[in-house]
Length: 223
Image (tube, rainbow, N blue to C red; front, side, top):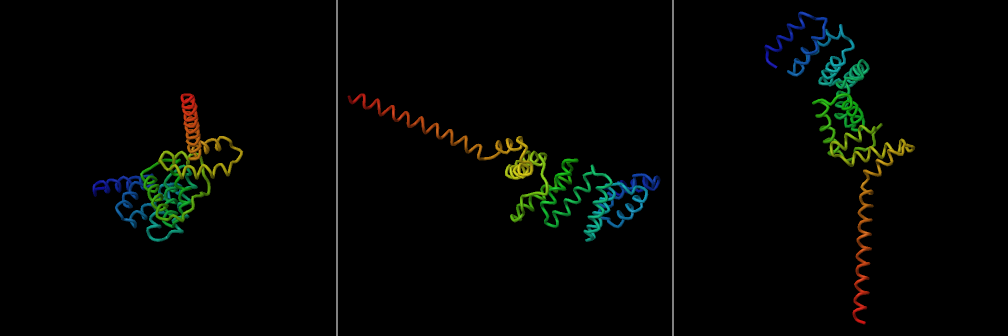
């Protein structure tokens, strides 16, 4: 952002200090790496708008940059409580868990963020999480909770093995749901293997029958 744009945001906020104009200015400072200036604007703006989820999340990110992870987590939770539909605190919590190596927890937060609103931030976090899981093979595949939306997202992204793992967990958690079992059977590689075996068995049967008929015809000719 240019100096002129930043000055315009500052003037806009100076003229209306009690409005939401504080957030675009704080975000501009944050993106420029001016964390102290961003924090100062946020603290002033949040006095008038204590439930501003994006503002709270940005303040938490600044604290995280300062190495204050526990304080940042508390603010992210506060932001989420203020607006459960806002994807920013969900992404921030996912980012915290990815950094800590807690991939299962990160998946939980990120799936909620993607369901709420897919953003550039959530897309980057998805890539970061997949890289983390690829690098650390010891990471478990079982998640704190799974949904059919998660299964659909995995399939959409071409991650069939993860979709199957999530669907199997859903079946285990909901054994009375026959539709989940049917979907699992349809996606399971065994379903395809079974079909192939049937094809092979039928082809083998036809081949043996043809050989037997040829042998019978050959014996008739010899007579």
